[in-house]
Image (cartoon, rainbow, N blue to C red; front, side, top):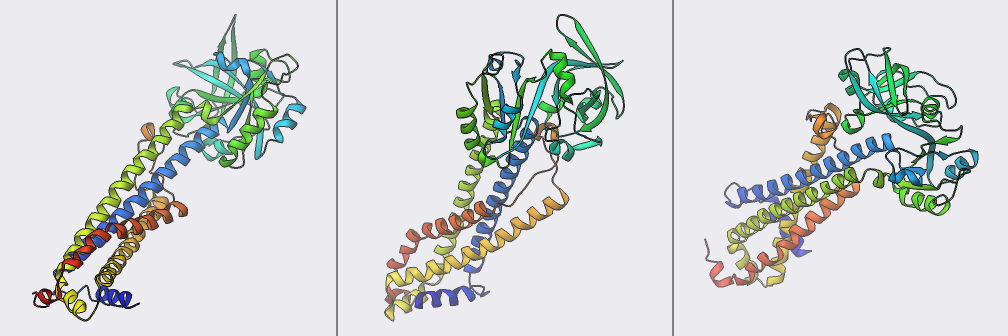
Length: 413
C-alpha cells in the first residue's frame, strides 16, 4: 500500500507547471488515448461492415440451400421434390426459422428502348420478405402465393434506372429454350441493397410462374432455402441436414444435397475474412505507439525524479519498491488515457450511428455510410490487453532506477 500511496500522490501532483515531465505525461496520455480510440473504432467499423454485408448476402441466399445434387455441376438448377414430408423434416432442423422453396430461371427483361439479362427467382408464401421490406424504396412487398400466377415483379433500383422502369410499369420478359417464351409483368416493388452483384441481376416473382416456365411438376422446385434464428447455429444445422437429408432420394430418383452460405458465396466471405487481418495490423501498430510513448514518458519522469528516488532509497526503500511506485504511476497515466480514448471512440460511434456523417460510395463498398457498432466483448478485451501490454512494456525500462545511487542522486538538480 505504501508504493500505491506514493504513486497516487505523484500522479495527483504531476501537473505541476514547473516540471518538464508535464508535456511528456500529456503526450503519453494522448498516445494511449488516440491508440485506444483508433483500435475501438477500427474494430467497430470492421465488425459492423462484416455484419452488414453478411446480412445482405443472407437476404438473397439464406443460411443453407437444399438442392438437387446434379445442380452443383450444371449451369441451371435441376428439379428436386419438396412435399409435405420434406418440409416437415427441414422444419425440424435445429434453429430453423423459415424454410422456403424457390425456383430459378435466367431470362431477359425488355422495354422499348433497352433490355437486360436477369435471373428470375420465384418465391412463395413461406419466403422471408423482411429483408426486402427493410430495403424497400417504392411499392409494397406482399407475399407471393404458392400456386397461382400474379404477374407481379420485384426489381432493384439499379435495374429500374437502367431500364427507365417505374412503379406500376409493365415490362416483358423473354425466356429462351427450344422456343421463345414471353411473359408480361408489372413492377410492384423496387428495392435497393447496394449489393450490386445481386441488384444487377436478380428479380423476384411468384414461384408458380417460374415453376411453369421450367416445366416442373407441382412439388418440384429448384431448391429450398433455410433461414436460421442465429448465424451461430449454422454448423449444427448444416451437420443435421448432411446426416438426415443429403444423399436421400426424391420420388423421381434425384438426390438431395445442401450448401451453406459459405459454400455458395466463398469469395465474399473470404474477402470479409481478410478484413480481420487489417484490424490486427491496426491493433498491433496502435499498441506499439501507446507503448513507445509510455516508455518515453516513464524515462523522463524517472530522470526528473532522480532526487526524489535518492531520498527514498536513503530512507530504506528498495529498488523493487521504487520500480513499483513508477509502474503504478504509469498505470494511472495509462488508465487516464484509456478513459479519454474510450470517451472519444464512443462519441464518434454515437455521432456516426445517429447522423451518418461519414459517407461511402455504395458502388464500391456496398453501403452508403460507414457502418459502426459497439461490441462490448471485443472492446473490453482491447482495453484490458492495452493496459496489460503497456504496463508490461514498462517493466524493463523501470530497472533504470536500480542504477540511481542515493549519495549522488540527492545532490542531483
